[in-house]
Length: 243
Ligand SMILES: NC(=O)c1ccc[n+]([C@@H]2O[C@H](COP(=O)([O-])OP(=O)(O)OC[C@H]3O[C@@H](n4cnc5c(N)ncnc54)[C@H](OP(=O)(O)O)[C@@H]3O)[C@@H](O)[C@H]2O)c1
Image 1: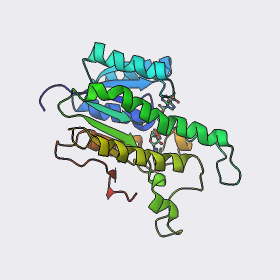
Image 2 (image 1 turned 135 degrees about the vertical axis):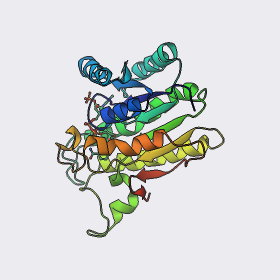
Image 3 (image 1 turned 180 degrees about the horizontal axis):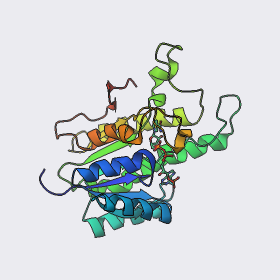
Image 4 (image 1 turned 90 degrees about the vertical axis):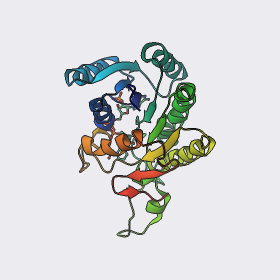
């Protein structure tokens, strides 16, 4: 893999996504900074470029068909293709989301970005990825989406607060990851889900205990898997996450 590789990172203007872009850029990759707000996107691109990253802005709202279609066109026209898609953009959907006190709009908002947005991106980018020599799809999931961890007893691996929107949206994203990995099993496209760990970002009011750079490490690892690497898996820094 000596040729220059191109990645698109969604939600790359801040938090973990920004650090994924920075990490891949440090490896010499061209990085598309997918972000919906022009000012935040251009600020991130400028900062990455100042650090020596070959970054370019990709206007992108993952909930919008036209925006995603235009992003695919931009990658084809300006970057000449796509090697790695990192579906990092994510939202909690809002609060409260405790079962028994939640609004369905909260669930819909989480699923719209965390699940449907990912499907929309993969479908739009697949024609480009199929032309790459080592294509990878990385879906930023969460350990709270693990059904094993959701159903564990307190003190025995139970993860995350009660949530009828965010955690189930990540469980569905995990299933989506498996479905694409199965469908693409006879291709060279590796599809995996990653968990960044509890990371200090806007998503959780900066209550996380890991730095965004630490949170980005798993996505960078999955983006740079060798050709004989795993597909259809769920990983965190420490290893495999149980479904
Ligand atoms: N932080 C954690 O502890 C943690 C743990 C497990 C998993 N994760 C996952 O890691 C990923 C990154 O989260 P983070 O902690 O870095 O959160 P963050 O700082 O809030 O960043 C989220 C990113 O997603 C973008 N985004 C949201 N809706 C979007 C849309 N419709 N179209 C395009 N971009 C959109 C945001 O853009 P705007 O700036 O425009 O809003 C922002 O760039 C998420 O998938 C999250 O679920 C995080």
